[in-house]
Amino acid sequence: MEAKRQAVRKKPVRRGEARDRLLAAARDKIIEQGLEGVSIRAINAAAGVSPGILHYHFGSLEELVLELLGRFMDPMMREREDLLRALKAGGHSPTIREIAEILVMPVARLALEHGEDGYGHVCLLARLYADRAPLLEEANMRWASRFNSALFEQLQLANPELHDPEIALRLDLAGQVLLRGLSALHQPPVPWLEQRGVAAVEPWQQVHVVVDFVAAGLGAAQAQPTGFHKPLSRF
Image 1 (tube, rainbow, N blue to C red):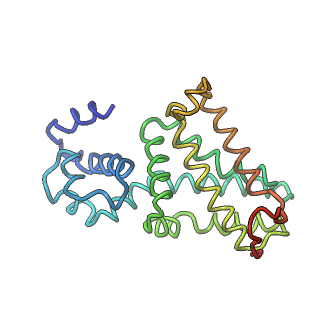
Image 2: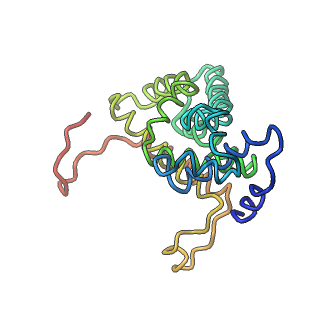
């Protein structure tokens, strides 16, 4: 697939095409190397455009990445808001399982039903989240803050014995799990599973496993220390 992309980028750039080439090249480079590992020069070269074209179209690498994120993140967060609103319209608070589905399913549909661009966006989010890229904070402020506030409130209602810092930590871990799991939907099993003869799992079955895992983590009751580890003060 990468060889095909390189061949396409060697063709002359038609009028109006440079912007999309830059977005695709930036996404691929960031997934591979992380945001801190790529340069504007490398993105221009990978896109097959002249030096300075990225600055001409976007002004900075940061604004390019924010536009790339916004193309999918904005409609994805709107879908999450709609799902949450529909559940609340029935007069009951969503269950932990329903909250997990609201978190996972829009991302899963993006990965499985929107072609290479959709799956690439999920992989980009997974890389930025794993790297703790500061730019994600700006993206969240632009497109996710309203949903995140509503989600936090629903988790407080669904699991009232949890303190706010623990809810925040569980949401952070859920984000890591769902993005790591969904960015691997088109990848083979990890080597140690292949060595044990574990067959690949059908993608939508993997999605349901991710939902189960996220729901279990968000809804788990507080456990008492077992004595095997140093006791931790509760949040």
